[in-house]
Image (cartoon, rainbow, N blue to C red):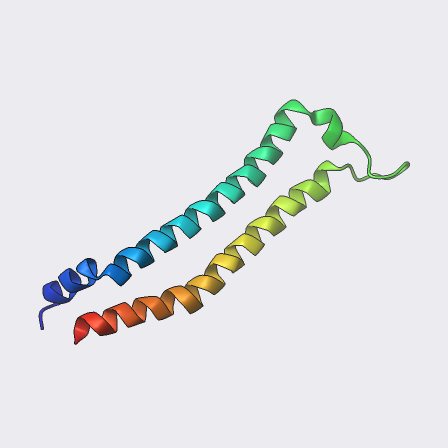
Length: 104
C-alpha cells in the first residue's frame, strides 16, 4: 500500500478528525492558561510595582514579586509536564490505533 493511500485513509477516518479536534482544544486551553499566568505577571510588573515590591514579612529582604515570578516558572514546568504526560499516553495510543486501522 502506498504512503499516499495511508495518509488519505487516515485523514478521512472519523477517529482522526475527533482526535485532532480534541488535541487542539486541549492545547488551546493549556495555552490560554499559560498566557493568563504569564501576562498577568507582566501586567503586575507594569502597573502595580508597589504590590510586587511589598516585603513578605516585616524585616524580610524578599518581596512578593520573587515568589510570584518563581510561581510563573513552576506553573510553566507543571503545565508542560501535564501536556507531555497526556501526549505520551492517551494521544500516542490513539494515534497508533488510527495508523494501525489505516494500514490494514
